[in-house]
Image 1 (cartoon, rainbow, N blue to C red):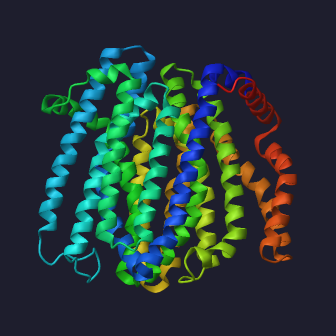
Image 2: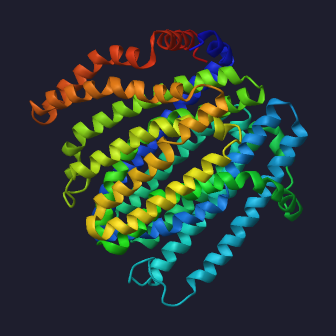
Image 3: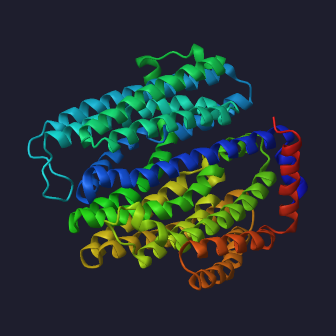
Length: 515
């Protein structure tokens, strides 16, 4: 790897911005992970496994409302970043006006259609003979309103990312997430029913959106002059052509994660849905590594593309792939070793851990850490159309396999379906497309994915063997000490000497100038 090129790609200002962004993004993912983990026992305590499974089915059905974003948040964020780096304030204000106005209109229309849908008599959960009573319909209405408010709000928030204020935007969000978590946890601890809890979620959504809008108007002067209205919404239709490919990516993700839950719910009891969801949530902690890095790195990749610094973009992408796979694999090893100790208490001893299901999910998550990261430069530069098509094929294949396998094999069959779709339409495709776009050999992209995996595999086997010789929390302590001892050689072998030296240099620069 050309370290000189990478160093010039990340100037002192950009490096400092990226490191601060990583810190704020890491905190955001810790909060999100804590939310996902700590809420599960509260849900189970308040409503039981059946009630929690029903809540999951309702939220899975509603998750498709987020598709009304139509990919606008990512696409408009990219063009705002391009306008900002070129110093075109008029275009920045125009794109902001058109984007926010368009998605306020779309969300309003979506709410009207949702009201009409909920008035239909005899509604059932998709694929199930469970009728939606008045309380269920109220839950859907309140949760749906909260999701729809977030759509134009999310487009508005891209002003943070586009103007180099990612860290501030993330920290504002972190404060709101912590407050919202405490507020909602109190409702569950008090045993309130789902309808009341859904109303509390709507309140947190409204307060959060208003807070963010006010803060952006203070920090980004150009945003104050935007014009909201039907004329701007009509003009904003031109952006749908580019944003729809991001929408296809969102649709594919929803089908892969929420669609298969609906398929499972149609052929298995709610307790099986809860079992699947808890294992998926636990293994989903692996994905937080990529999320931590992607959020602050995305605008930097967009900057490099706008400045036509292609070689530097390729070098940074290869380094980031190695780092994400390495860290994701380490998290997966930790989950595999220690989740069995925590799972009974986490689920209130209402569910039993299934090692085969957890293993499938963890393998899938680490594999995804590699191939999905390869697609980041394409996403950041609005060259995502081919990724969108393959992601949709992935979702279609996954759902069809889930329908075929769920009745006979249950949660294992659905998990295998999701893994198969990822291998055939993700791992086999994304690295090839990334290599072509970055003008590097495909073997380099696959090498960046596989090198950390080959280093981590023997390390993971060794730690598993050591953990099996001790009991309970004693094993945790021993493995933790060994992991610290092994960390440096594992990182060095995974990233390479040059990359490691460069990263250490950047960390020292940040320590000398933390502001």
